[in-house]
Amino acid sequence: MFSNLEIAKLMNLWFINIKVDREERPDLDEIYMTATQLMTDGGGWPNSVFLTPDLKPFYAGTYFPPEDKFGRPGFPRILRAIQDAWVNQRKQVLTQSYRVAEAVARATGARIAKIGFRFLPPCLQNRLLLESLFT
Image (cartoon, rainbow, N blue to C red; front, side, top):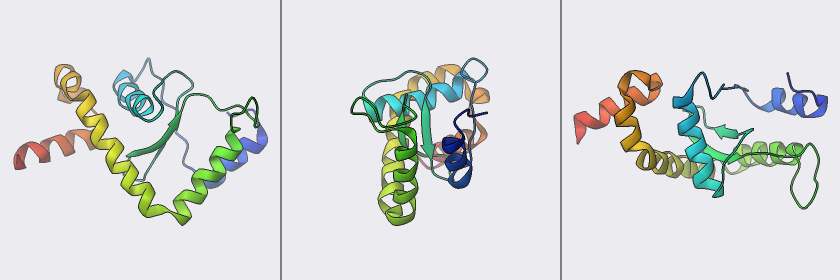
């Protein structure tokens, strides 16, 4: 799917890549776009969001050029840095992911309640159900 073979190789080597169609899954787009906006003060597409195995976002951005250009890091540099952080700074990455997840929950809480439980991904349904039992 990814046309740059170097980038595709790095993506497939280190990550599980999932493409979400924002028109088919606006619920997921809202969650992960909110995470991107909270982390970067901006948003847009393509939206690349890096998650922990329990689906908590810890890094995001909207466009990374294929190579370092115009003072912006290229996608290969981003991928290498994220892999390095996951391997060598996992505690900090996990701490960041919990903070971002909490901020996203606060930012989207009212809209999620309006959308309804049935449209949420199962992991969020379970989390909200558990939280409602203990609060």
